[in-house]
Image (cartoon, rainbow over all chains, first blue to last red; front, side):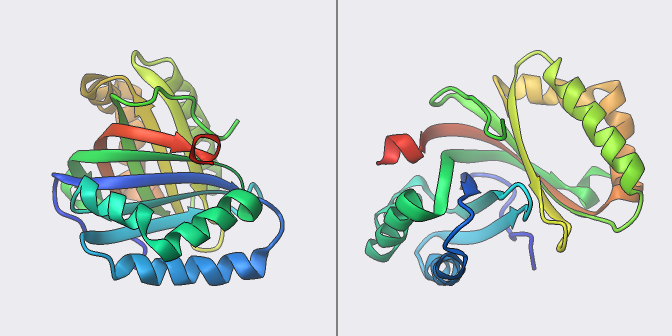
Length: 112
Length: 112
């Protein structure tokens, strides 16, 4: 399942856009899996959508949350903070994070 | 340049998550380039970030806009509407679109 199941509106999205360095693939993949699992266990977690192009190494991960507070708690999670440090030093050439409120949504089915 | 240059907050994001069908690659790529150019010429356009994994065919494109109205105008653009029809019939197995207000943002540099 690559699409997140989310409400129609009034929830929050964390858009994480990043370029991976060309190194540390094994440790990165291991930690990415661990962070996926850890995020799922957090209060207010709704779902995640993530993809990366192997050639450009540019990826976008969007995680969905019930509130701004649940996003703040996830950012401050102590194990997540360790991963963030490796992200800054080893894994990402650059990243941008944008925290958003979802105002409305639709899908292929609802747009037809 | 893969990252969009955007303000700190108070702008809008359109998150478009999709799975491509395995067909129509040539016509899809041509139209995708045309739509990128057309989007850039729209009032209120701020930037775009886009990536797709070649194996899973799962992609995320986030376009950034000054207002909800500029997103609505882009959705209603007549040439974009033609592309949307091909998207539904030929190019995407499924997609989800979420329209969001960016509340705050940070980057690798500002998080250090």
